[in-house]
Amino acid sequence: MQELYKNKKHNNSEDEIDILELFHVLIQGRWIIISLTSLVSIIGVVYSLYLPNIYESKALLVPVDSSSSISGALQNYSGLAGLAGISLPSANPKSNSIKAIETIGSLSFFENNLMPQIFLPDLMAVKSWNFNTKTLTYDDSIYNENSSTWVRDSSYQAKQKPSAQESFAVFKSKHLNISEDKLNGFITLKIRHQSPFLAKKWAELIVEEVNSFYRKKDKSESERAVIYLNQQISKTSLSEIKQVIAELLQQETQKLTLIESNKSYVFEYIDPPAVMEKKLEPQRSTICILFALLGGMLSILIVLIKHYVDREKASLA
Image (cartoon, rainbow, N blue to C red; front, side, top):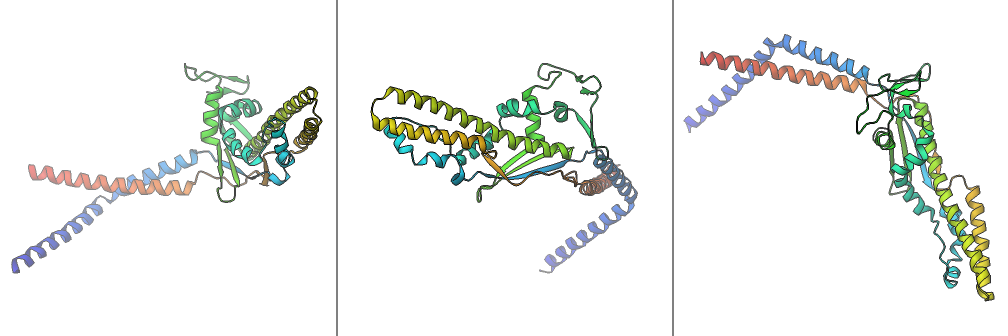
């Protein structure tokens, strides 16, 4: 029992000696720790200053209420259409809003609806944003602003002028963020860019284009339905069927009127996008602190490794 107590006391003494030795080693290597931590901290400051400011414009959207939408206009007549052997296209706004979220994140929507209205260098060649002059500077190695030509190196996969697929990949990964709150159905659309004005402009463009996309789509379907109903009414001789088709034609005409007059066809704003005064990122103070911590831990590790390597060499000598 006494021997066990002595061993335990001896181990505690060794632990205490190790801690004291460790503290002594760190004191001896303090200039290495201070120098390396300072160097890494300076690198962190330079790196944080090199990063451009990113602004985020956010729009809070809500699907257009079904009670005021065109789908309600045809709901009471869907049974009559079935009796007449006619199938009319659905225009459920809730369904449209769900599909619209996926549409916004699709290549085809970007290529056909957004890309023609976006100045491509603003997406693919921005170097910096001057907040005072409200102007963008472009990377000369990618785009020559004076001659309005693309000058970047081209390869098999990356052409001199960015393709729709390459531009879409950049747009989706660096600029676009869209999400839906499952509890209340609200949709949050966020656009990030070095220019707060472009962030707002692109957010508005997306909402406008997705509303226009589904408005045109439903208008085309309704016009086809009118043509079809006119064909059917001329083919039948039964007065009951003609009456049903006439009522359906009346509703389709009303539907077309609502489509033309309804600007917020799929989404309407709860909170529209704005030109933000404060940047979203980078958080320069956080970056500097992280670099300082990294430098401190790295310098301590180097001092300890150096000490134990020197001690090992001394013991082998």
